[in-house]
Figure 1 (cartoon, one colour):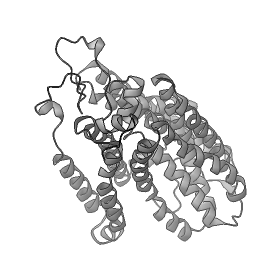
Figure 2 (figure 1 turned 180 degrees about the vertical axis):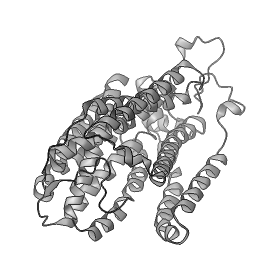
Figure 3 (figure 1 turned 135 degrees about the horizontal axis):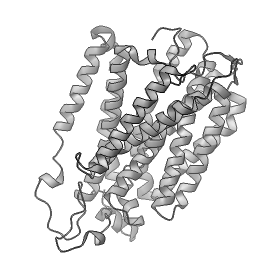
Figure 4 (figure 1 turned 120 degrees about the horizontal axis):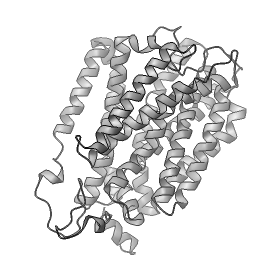
Length: 413
């Protein structure tokens, strides 16, 4: 993308930006918010078995709960970008943080899956507004191309930091307190950002009114959410089942209709020329594949280690440390490698290395000899004796070490 070409959702196009007195402090605030958005996405993985035991949930419920935040985050991201375009970055950021903070405050008091699921969905909706608004404000903080490029180089590593912190801190919090306290982190960060937004962040007033493009927004949101749901449920349903094919095909039809509508819209959410660039389309596909693979690996590995290996939450969090170290190191090495070998070669090598790592992972429990304990919750499904009706399927249990700690004994880490 050239320096003068604006991507969809770039809320800096046609805006008036005020002068920033403390750009470093503003960047620290925006960076903390961005890190927290990814922290919230990753922090649910380690506590899943304990949440399932406390609320009486089964594996499909846990998978849906882990994906709910990402469903609304991804589905509403384009529309959130347009709202930031239309109403200004700081205003959109404030509204998004209010939604995010409200849901984060309600989630710890959830008595059951419905309330907790609703809170996670609202969290994702707030994040879909906060993320593009923060990018818009960031452009106002660093108006010069050189300063903005340097800031973006650091910004790209915040997702890694957030995912790492989510997996590590959630295990520590769960071992010391309760899974409900993991929502205190996004709540505190959101409230702090709301308090400091006005004195630190510039106001970005749009110089022209952008159309909301409600038909495109509805089609994009429904198509992305429905298609994502179809991919999520493949973990508990076969690909050939109606529960998978219907949402996948429905999402594809809605996204096709979205592209048709956008080609005829005067002010589209996603200009057709944006996806016509083959390099950009390939890069977006690579980002999507790596993000989906990483998210599902976190969830399934956490379930496997705690339910099958009987690891404690703290030890499970520690298992992600090597992944985080390698991820940070490879991120720092990516720049010089791209300059020497080109982005295509580095991207291909990265995806190949990720595929090799997944290939070396242990096979699912269903492909190995299962344990003979009645009601033992496995990594792929809750194992139950043949005579137990499906309606009486036991909920997934937390690891032995966690149960001993909750009983007042020393946790085995």
